[in-house]
Each structure stands twice: as structure tokens, then as C-alpha cells.
Image (cartoon, rainbow, N blue to C red; front, side, top):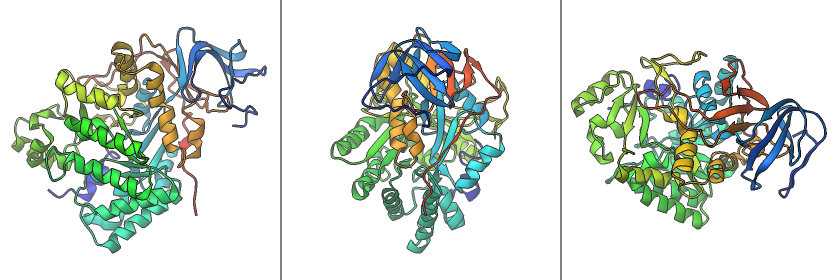
Length: 508
């Protein structure tokens, strides 16, 4: 089946320091000046300096202005005794940049949410759309979308192999997006596997030229050839090695599934040889995408190790009993969202692959959040609580809390400081060359942005399930974005819209 231009244009979109203080060398700065907000006595974790001790945090004008061993005063004081105080979590992989979805992410500890895998085009329009809707509670930003550039340039041939001349026009739009402040290049060869491999390589060269990262949904995710997982990962690693670009591979567990050990070894070996490549994952065995994705076609299912009944058609909750029924749904509603149960984490033989992805050295935690929908249509209204018929994948709601509650507290597969580092500092560092703003995020230091989460390490957990994804996570007591409360005393501040755009440097 040829995927229509309309289908892809709708993909993930229509459905879904001036403080005067200097921090350096691990030193602690403090001040006697009055503060807007003081966070008192919490276990303060700064993943960059290694600070892990009880501290008093002062905030003024959206910035952290004090990290003190002794009490300080402020107009508003938060007693954080017994709680964790850390930088807010940075989600580099979200397709749900709207108010209700970001409210849910706030309860998951997120202060910055970014659309980087798919990206957007044109950049100005994407940022303007957020502004015209009154802003967002969380910080937000976009990469430049390779697939959108292809649709704009190639029309109905956007998912096909094209001439070098046509491919060059696509790359010109990508370069234009970088010059307009994109925080990377979003690449989706997995959804259009017949497209030019040379074009992918040339996109990596652009990323190296401007020192911005790329974000790839790998071309191949099958367990046999052609289109094998090894082939898909190999394309990314080869481009990184040949160009020097920083290539980031999205959702390790759902791209590699039962070949997570092999894919992980490829990435790790490349890293040890100096190749600039990173990866991310989320703590679930199921993925989510539009039901007509090429790798979900009936003739391809056996190559991914699943059956038609492994797929849930979200609009109705149906698990197609046969390949013929799956094909019928795909033909009637190609843009319909689905949940795909690649791995059953209730089975130890499957759960081990998710565990390996979560514990991959220096792996980033990222949600791949999907928008809430009602009857197949995107739900973006600022309603709280969300309507009972709003549905999504639970990863959109509980990714970070699940890591902290299940993988840190219950199973001790990660330490608390390491889990925080994977959710804050590592994503900030990934993006710093593209967006200098990120140098002030992912840290809890004087001069850093006051994006702060305060949570109870004994109670934080995800509650969203596949049956009821509308249950927000619990355990986050306070969440500040640029020094403004989005959650206060575990209560959503529904009028707060302190999120600011994250954007790269403008280039000429």
C-alpha cells in the first residue's frame, strides 16, 4: 500500500543568567538577598557537580540564585524535608506538545518536552502555533523534520527513491531549518524505508557541518533480512563514523525488540571507538504509532515477531484476530493510532530486553509520548481531569515516574542519582551544541534555569495503564518551570503557562 501524503502530514501532528553569581568546580554559592522562592532542606541532587546533600535553594526571576548549606529566606518557602529536589526532567522525544498532554507530563516530573524524532516544518509555524494557543506549561522545541521537507518538495513521491536533483532540494530545506534555529534533524527512514540512503548520509553531513544532533527512527527493525535490525542500526552508526555527526537513535527497546543485546553492543562498541552516537528508551514493552506503518502491514508482521492480535486499534480497543481484519482496519483508517505489544514485560524472557535497554550505559530516558485522542481525534482542550474517553499509551503519562518507582526503588536496577542524570543532564548535554539554552538546564546550580521537580522517593510511581491511561503519576509534590509553579502541593496550577521555546542559534 502506498502511504499517502495526507497520512504522513497528519502523523503525530493532526492526531496527536543575570544573577551575578558564578558556579564552578563544585563550589556552593549563597546569598543574603531575599528570594522569591526558597526550597528548604530537601535532598538536593545536581547530576553535573555530583552534589547529593540537604540544601536550601533560592530562586529569583526564573533562575536559581542560591544553593546553601544554611537556611535562607524567601517570600515563598517550600519545606522539602524528606523529599528529593532535582532538575526538572527533559523529555527529548514527545509527539504531544499540547496543554492536556503536558499537564500529564508535569505530574511525571517533566519541565521540558521536545519534538525531535519527527520534528516540524516550517519551524516558525510550529513555534507560532504554540504561542497562538496561549503557550504551554512546559518548555518546548522542535528539530527540523526531514519527512516534512520531503513532502513539501516531492509531493506524492515523498516516500520513494528520487533523483539526486530532487534529493538535493530536500536537503536544502533541511539546511534552511537548521539556519532558522532547529535543535537538530528529525529522521524517520523507518516509516519510508524505500527513500534515498545517500540522502540520509547527506543529512548527517549537514548535522556535522552545523554541529547539531540527528534523531533517527531506524530504517530496519525486522528480525530477518533485508531490513534487519542490524542493518538499521548499522546505517546510523556508519553515518556517524563517516561524518562525525552526533547521531541519536530513538527508542532502543521498541526498535530492536528481541535484538536489544546485539544493537546495544553495536552502539557501545562504536562509542568506545569515539563515534558520536547515543540512544534512549522508555520503560514499556509496547510501542505506539499509526496502524498503517510499513512494519505493521500483515505481510511484515512475522518479521517483527508479532501477530495481528499483538496490535490494539486504539479507537475501538480491538485486537485484530486475523491479518485480513488488520488490513481492513488499515485501509479504512490508515491514520488510526495503535499500541503494539512487541514484548510482554510480565514474561521474564521478554522483560529482560526492556531491562537491558533501561540500563544501557549512559542511555537517556525519553517517553515517545503520544497525544490523547477521543474517537480517533486529537484531544487538546485545557480540561482537567481529562475526559473518560481520552486515550493514549501510558508511556505518555508515566515514563519517568515508572523508572523512579519501579526500576530505582523496587528493583534497584538503577541508582537514584543515575536515573536523574539520565533524565536531566544527559539530554541537556546532547542538545547544547544546537541550543545554547540547554546549558542552563538539567542542572541544579546557581545561574541555572529554575526548572525544578520536588518529589517523594518513597511514593513516586506511575499509575497510567493500557486500560486507563488517564491516571497521572503520583509523588511529585512541586514542579517549577522557569521559577513558576505548575504543580504546587501536588495540585495542578491550571492557569500557569510558563513554558518557553527552546530554539537553536539563528545562522545565515
